[in-house]
Length: 401
Image (cartoon, rainbow, N blue to C red):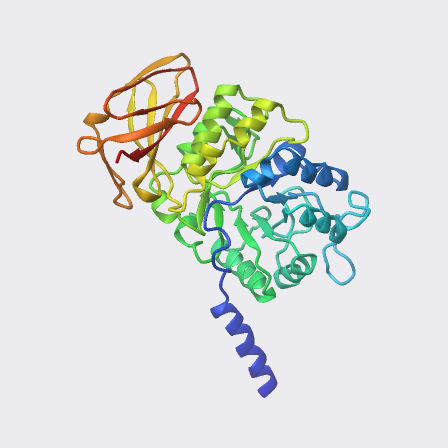
């Protein structure tokens, strides 16, 4: 009887007091994920080439540290002891050796699973195996777990993700927990103490403004995701970010659309998880993904998501408060033709609607830098520029001394 009581108390203690590890994602996580380009067609050679390319391209130095294998890395069945089995055909050397290869490159390694009985692609899910799978991940030495929401009939999202959080915490291995619940159960209201990031939408699709209907569900273009959720920025910040999904930069949109997509994700403090084939990307894609000025906007220590403060003549006006009283502004041309921007700073006094930061060009002169062009200016004069269709102008402002 006493033994049973001790077991009960121990289990309750794990459930009540388990916490996510603090400080793993003070700024939005950055990395690469296999799904957008390769889906389940992943293997050992791809991982090694991708790790090599992350280093050689300058992406690692720019902050892209997490190499994440999405759905399809495991065999179709668990072994006789209920353990997950990495696919021996796709990974003939085994995952421990492969993860060691990635770690020796100075990178971190991530895997995927699902809260349901099966993953979205039909591989073994984690339902009923949370603690066993968490021990497996910790033994492998992974650093990131993306946790999906397919085949979850009959279970409650908050409880399912809390259980997996507790299982990861019990291993004592610091692992970023990425909730991929698609925003259906409003994770921004309850996931701050559970994971470092949570998806706010269904899957992204490489188009600027579209819905791609799969029959029973839809994928969404850049602008659809950008506008999908209202009034959720107040729930995000350091170590708990709204995830606008993986990047489609380099996957078929125009150069202007790629620029807008990347800049907007930076403005929204979304995790920057590349989804292209970085072993074959062109210089234009490489330069965009490694744009240090834009990445600095995303990685700002305040960790605040941007907000739209105006719309005029087909142009969205976005603002993002930054540390040290600095700001980033983005002017997005949503229309199908070029637009002329004439922004009179002297007319604007902007208050962050959720966190109270103040921008006041009526009383304060700001110097600013164009983040896609090598030029600077200040707010004594109007910002006049032509923005091509679906393109964007981004500036960073600081108070003039």
